[in-house]
Image (cartoon, rainbow, N blue to C red):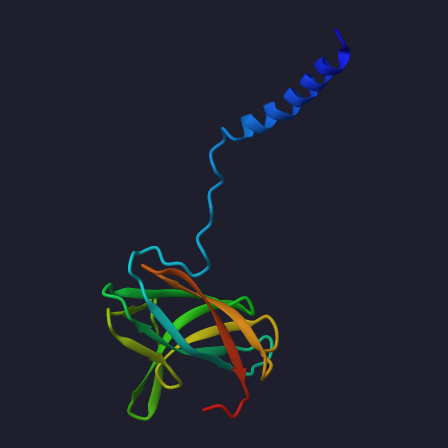
Length: 164
């Protein structure tokens, strides 16, 4: 008997066994796409996210428009903005000659089918103790955190100091 067929058979089996055992493993889990909602049927639209230019060490504010196009109510509970030490959701209210800023510790409700605008003089996200300058013309990443929709990544345009 010639040794070549035995050697070929051994090499062939040595290559097939790991491949066959690998096929027995469970498939690797796949991560949901960025911004994917946890609740079935969530349809949130975020428009015009912007902030004014600001210097490191000072505070800034983030403004945007949220629209809940789904049949499920949601709540904005937080915002992640890497250029700020921390963020808080606030609402400004005019009381006589004074403007009062109120922390929205429980977040802000976004009823089904409704639109909510964060604008100067109203709801806004405070960007506290900026870690770096916010420069007019740049665009930065932020993440909105919702009770139902989960984390939703957004892009924030930095406008000049003369922005309304």
